[in-house]
Amino acid sequence: MEIIYTILFKVIWSGVAAAGFGILFNIPNRTIIPVFSLGAIAGLIKFSAIHLDVGIIIASFIASGFVGFASIPFSSKKHTSPFVLSIPSIIPMIPGYYGYKTLLGVVKLALSDNIQSEQTLFFSATQNGLRLFFILLVLTIGISLPWLALRKKVRRKLLIDKAEDLVQ
Image 1 (spheres, helix red, strand yellow):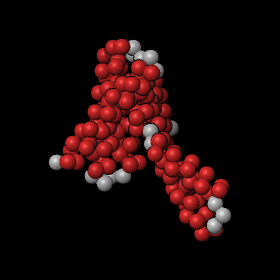
Image 2 (cartoon, rainbow, N blue to C red; image 1 turned 30 degrees about the vertical axis):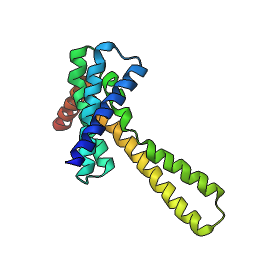
Image 3 (cartoon, rainbow, N blue to C red; image 1 turned 45 degrees about the vertical axis):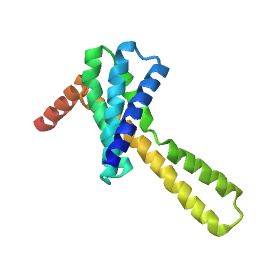
Image 4 (cartoon, rainbow, N blue to C red; image 1 turned 90 degrees about the horizontal axis):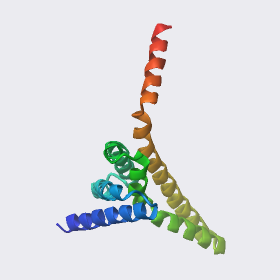
């Protein structure tokens, strides 16, 4: 039961952080509630998946993919771009912890004199840096891929290319 309260606590603060970033980015007032909702649901998906031992990278991809797909109908209802809704909703999912640990490891590595501790620091900094990179990568892909795949021009081009392939 305690884990449910922990996840709900994180969900609420994910929504608040998303709305805060939306206000910081000066989004229209009519889009603050959808940004809060998308951020909270993305937090729910991510933290629930992490609790189920999916892994932070896959959990971030699933949550950002949801935001990418869900921002399209929200954006047509609110008459705005999907990115106005999705970018502030995803920013609370950026892993500042791994960035901090990476930079801290690099600084400690630069100041270290012990070769054995340098190896440990190097591998730790590299591991945190790679996690940071892949989480940022899947957040970007998760937001962009649904929007690009559902555009009419992209679908039309794919259909034309397939038709030409069949003729030859």
